[in-house]
Image (cartoon, rainbow, N blue to C red; front, top):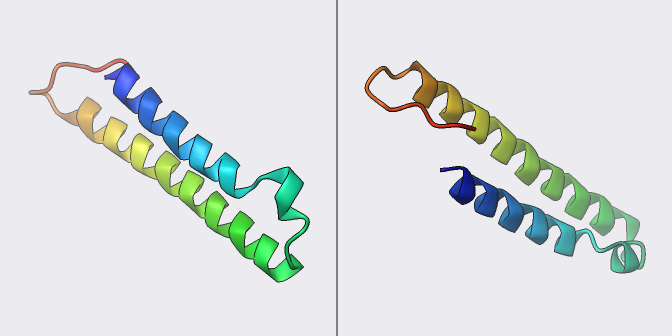
Length: 69
């Protein structure tokens, strides 16, 4: 399970990193750059929230073999 979650996490990080390309972000209009950064932060926060919620739900279930996170 760890490999799948790590792959998903890496893919999300790669997409965010591409959106917030330092060589390009400061060439944008400030309001556009700020919006891109806010959206990227929201994506990362949502992933983190969903990951930990899913982890907690799996750990609380007695019928599911414990996964190492």
